[in-house]
Length: 549
Image 1: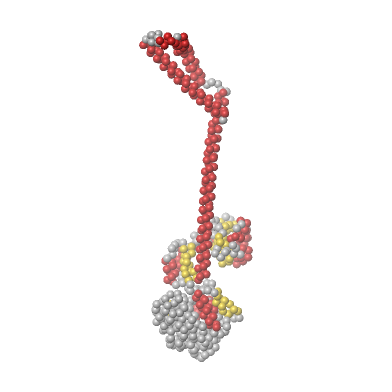
Image 2: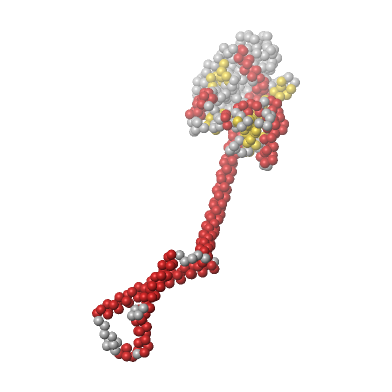
């Protein structure tokens, strides 16, 4: 018996006892020949020992918990295996997880001529080949660990696969917890748990009872594809993120935040030239698991250290031990914040993740809403989906907090702007008042200076003109003479003047012209005097206000 159920004697991958003759023998690590009816179906009595990876029998299997198998008679390996089943001809009835043929397995099945029934997760139509939890195959066995071409797979590669997934194989194949048929029940339950990706798979290794965690389970049935944002940072910027197992409330003081930088600087060493700072434009943020993420940069001699180099230094075993003990840093989440080059991105997209259908992966790449900013990533199980949802809620919360902070800043800016406008108006009024005061002070100074100065040329000219005008008015037969004469007549003989005003004065045409010229000149002189007097009154009033103010 070979590793995967070949009838040709070969060297086994594990040195476990095998039956020497085709008779009923005691159970080995990978098979049991006890003819008892298990919980999940019936096993037929056969001359060969049932194996984990394949048996040779001629039986009529009966219905099990996960499906009723059709009656078939074969002369090839038809028993259920972990990684695949040989081709058979059967008809299947509805089961809990889908229609299964004789020898169907949780991780892959190969059959021909299968009529599939309705299942819990949907209905399927008749196809030439049906699949297990993770794929289908035709002519070869396709399991969770890869496809094997009908006993042509090299034994060395099979041994490598078994060694790589040894805990998982023992858990779902032969847990050896009870040493009887109950181990088969536990193995099948472990297979179901592996397909569902929940709980833990218990098994026994030597004398120790262990359990294989479902974390990183590539055979998770509930698999989806999400999108992660590509970092736009470069290696030259030197951004490195660290996750501290502390809530952000414990790091809300400047003293504690500065203490973190001091501890990281002491761990890095390098003397006084090394400087550790928080990355510009970043802040501490809370993650979905309650931890706190910080982003730092390191400078040496004024030059920023590369992000990849700084992350490698921090991930060094001695330094990581100090970070864990002093700051409780998560050693798996000390990462450089560096984007991917185009070549790295293309290489990542060309590699299909394990457990993901290539067609679905290509479709996810094609439907990427932002190929230059987002990358498709596999999401395995409900736990990962819940973690992504929590992370999304956390990011949304950060965005809302940032928007609220911006709103508060805008409101504060509006208040400050209104206060500034009021202060500017007050300053403008104050400036106007001071300007008036300066004008008044300058006017008062000018007046004081004029008092102590001599009469200038303009004033002498004005005074001379005024004296000349006065002399002309006081001369005989001039304006003042006639005015005085007129007043005298009015005072002495007002009645006669009233009666004989047309007879007393006999003026010629020349006298009338002369009187008209004199009166016109008099009117002009009076108007000039009035204007000069008005200007002087205004000047005196301004001086009075200046002296009083």
